[in-house]
Length: 255
Image (cartoon, rainbow, N blue to C red; front, side):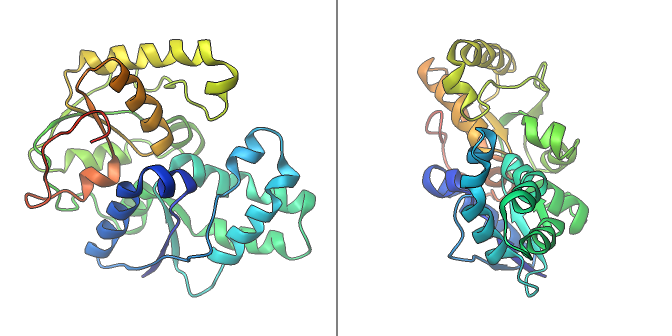
């Protein structure tokens, strides 16, 4: 299957290891991974803050990159960006786009998958051959949980990882408080929500907190680092790609 990887702007600029892990994981599973170099931001942050018209060039560019019929699937290591592509792009295209853009957007949307969705639902894989001998807890991000409804797919993938000690996160379904510009516009509320999340993570005695969204990991990881907890964060893809050869010592909150 020819699979296009959408890196997301946050992944590209701040979490390149997660993007590289996704590409390597897909390649190991026999996929022909391609990376359209013209890709940029999906426009989520513009739409979420009310700038739908300003998001149009980004939606147009995304459709041009990924609606290509030679691409069988588009994999995104981010629930929030996947949600934007599926639910926001068509709205922007209908309101402000040129004729034909909506059809391009619909074609792109139909073959776009969050990483765990693609592995479990499309490839039918749960055990990806990973090994990760650490105590880990999983935070299900809001977009993946509520918008995409990925359910327990990430947990099923994690449970199949060899040597992992996977511990349940109390009140896992509660938001970490990031929410993009929500964390900036409502800093006090965001900080209070993050404090609850960090307290629950700390109660698990986990070495790592993992999630499928770099944005939530950035927020959570920042809090863990400021408190000097020694708890690290890793994107789901980084754990799923780990083998006995690739395991490295933990190096802090963003290890």
